[in-house]
Length: 243
Length: 217
Image (tube, rainbow over all chains, first blue to last red; front, side):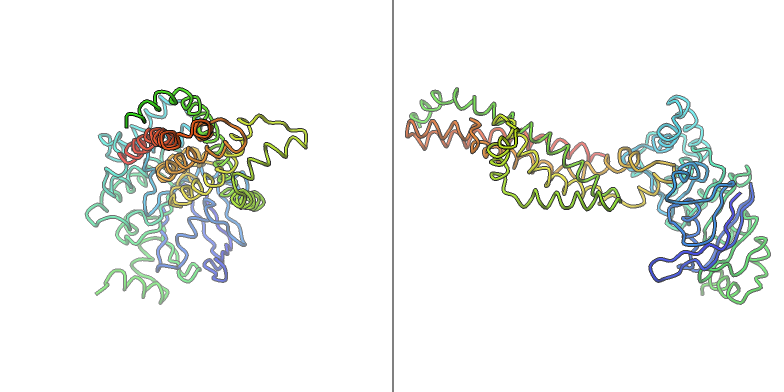
């Protein structure tokens, strides 16, 4: 349902994506791993048009992604995103964050949106925090609200940009647990992450990106346990055995 | 002191007429400058080069012209082009335009202070530019903008006295008229000063109230 073909992207004179070709099928969970600065986040941001790309094609459900075209709004309502730093709206409560898109973008009736919103907060284990402001929530709780906000748009896929990197270690599990449940329910997910255990257990496929190219990809367990390329081997060794 | 109190009871009714005009000019030009300023600021951050360039140019032109010249222009020059404004209209329009430049810069600073992640989050739930502004950016910018906005209100209250230069008989002009006919300069201008001060106190309290309310979250 998401296809990238030979995608190039430069920031000024620095080329961060040098011909990325990849695809994500429906209900598939794909983890993107790689060193920082390798272009992982940029790939996600190009998929939902937060960044434009210079060459190649990105197609979501048959529609070409063009960040400057009006069609981008329709694509964004189908492909939600969860950010490393949550990016909840601080002036709105948890439930207001969740219903913001349904009410104001999709014109869903208030009562229905709030009912669905509360169900989604319950789904991420925060039924009792609906009226809390983001500042009153822990990082893990905020990220779960952000996931509920993404789900509220009833997307066909969700992009996760290092969703646990800004969390205290003991809060990571709650967020990953919610994501695992989503994966089990058949949500299409693209996850940029450093959580190798999550990638191994939950992902169908893993893409290893380095220097703006897909160095290696395949079934999660194969790439993570028997990496073929020396750069993948080197990266995994350093991530899994940092000492 | 007794003299002062006697003068006060005598002059107060006349000065209060001036107060009414001062309030009218201040509120009128405050509303106009807020609307115009927001408009310039939104043009400036629109991301459309022609609009932001136009806005930046306008702001610089407005900022570069003294208020008094702007007022003279509207009141004395515009009639030559067939646009005759009353003194009150000209002063509200002139001060409104002059202050829109400061309002615009203040609003722009507030808008640009909002974390880019907020805008991205709004975009990823499908919000367009205007919806993002209205639902996400502006409500957060308000709390950043309010303290300087309060200063602008108080400055505007005081600058409304410049309307006297185009014959609006607001507080300062009423004071000057009384003083020049009675020679009681001390009493009159002390009264005028106290009345300006009295009018600015509610503004100060209002801003403080807004700040508190915004900071509660």
